[in-house]
Structure formats: C-alpha cells, structure tokens
Image (cartoon, rainbow, N blue to C red; front, side, top):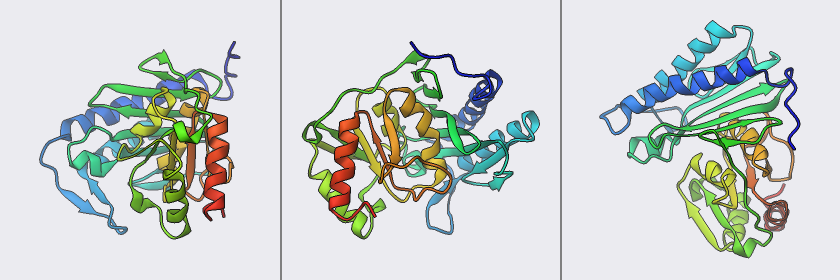
Length: 269
C-alpha cells in the first residue's frame, strides 16, 4: 500500500497549480501546432517558436500571480528565486524540432522542486490529449489512471530510446554506440514522449546526454512513481546542477547493466 504523501512534501494546492500550468500551456501549443509559425534560432542554434515563448509566459504569469514566493527556472525566460523552498522548472515545448515538423512527440514539461528535490512532474502532450502526472509518494498516472514500468532484467531484450545520436559527443558517443549495440530495439526521435512510454510500461530504457535541467527534472517523479529509476550516468540523483546525462530505466537490473556498459566504454566519467 502506498503511504499518503505528507502535506509538507507536495501540498494539494501545488498539484492543482501544476495542472493549471499544463492547461495554460496546452491552450497555446494547440493553437500553433501545424500552423505557419516563424522559427528563430537561439544562441546555441536550437530552434524556438512563438509557441515556446507564449506557453512559458502564460505559465510564469500564473505562478507569479498564484505563488509569488516560488522560484522559476524556465527554458525561454531564465531563472528567478531559485534559492526558494519551492522552485518550478518549465519547458514549454520539449521537442521543438518535432513541433515545427508537425510530429506530436513534443510535450510541455513541468517540475516542482522542494528544497532542490523533484517532488512533482508533468508531461503534457496536448495533441494526443495525454498527460502524465507524478507526485512523490503516489503512483504516477496517465490521464488519471495508475501506470507501471515493465520488467526487463536483460539488456538483450530491451527497447531503448534517445532523441538523436548527435546528442552524444566524444567518449559519450562511443559509450552510446556500445549500449545501442547491446539492446534488442534501439530507436530515436520520441523526445520527452519516450519517458512517458517508459513509465507506462512500453519502453525499457531512455539514455540521453546534453540535456538541461528543464529537460530531465520534470521526468523524475513520473518515472519513480511508476516504479522506475531516473539518474545520471553514474547512478546519482538528478538536480539543477547535474551534467545532463541521464539513464531512465524501468528495471533496476537493466539500469545497473546500462551503467556498466556505459562505464566500460568510457562514458561513466
């Protein structure tokens, strides 16, 4: 039986606010999907659209109005009050390249950190009308129904996702190739949706690199609440200062085996 979540860990009003944030972003992203939109290149050459900016602005306005003492760490408009007890981490459109090419694998990602620890996470896919919710101490849900990871103790049986091979560079690329060669079904191109599929028991591993905190922190509570693990490549807990390399696994044995393959190939430094 799951122990009821302590009110001080993630109060119900914070969960309600998170759902309102997802609704606000969904209204924006739906209105721009598969519509002519101008694409801008950021300093790192990654694309951004008016949908990214308006969706984050809508969420930030709601936080400032509802919980002005909370911090915010967002992809498009930066960070404020990140030393606060509660900090929201926002990625309005995770998978912008998918969004601008009309592929519904993007999602809005929302995390809530309590003293630096992720205690709530949302993946919202507005086109497919799918929403994953994770709250520490509770079972994770997909559209309100509890979900669970699946067992996969042997890497040779695993389905593995990463967004794109170019996210791995140097020794990480060598390590990724070793892992990709060890599994049954390596796939690319699902963005945050792959983590939702893992939490729901359809995928066994998601291994990525070159991520930012808003890419991975919203996923922690979802995957853990479904019985899985989400760590860095050395098995450490994820936070705002992690190095951007992550392993999501539904099975502890698969997670351990993945770390071993990556480390042996030079990617566990």
